[in-house]
Length: 116
Image 1 (cartoon, rainbow, N blue to C red):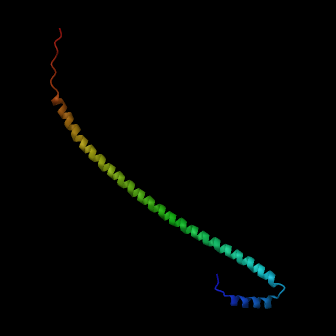
Image 2 (image 1 turned 180 degrees about the horizontal axis):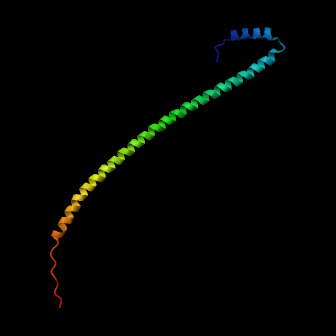
Image 3 (image 1 turned 60 degrees about the vertical axis):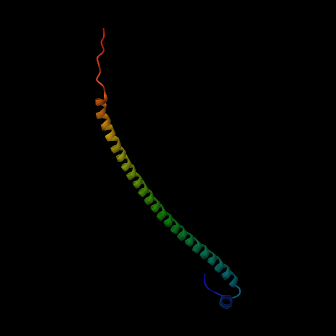
């Protein structure tokens, strides 16, 4: 966290020993250790929350891009289906119209049967 070397820690320890005294130094050191541990856990929790939010944001962006791609694909498929349907209808209608006009002409006139 801080860039503190061994010699700097020795100087801090000696100053603390002189200022606080040898009787209270162990309690103060223990309390500082607990506080440093809590601080490190808090920093780790904040980092984890930030990473989680970043990942969620990336997932949201990915989801949006996938939805846009799916919508584009669906639209292109729908347009192609519409084109194909209109082409099939256009191809089927002239055949159906020609067949319906040709059918009465192709029929031979019926000769009435003699009964008797």
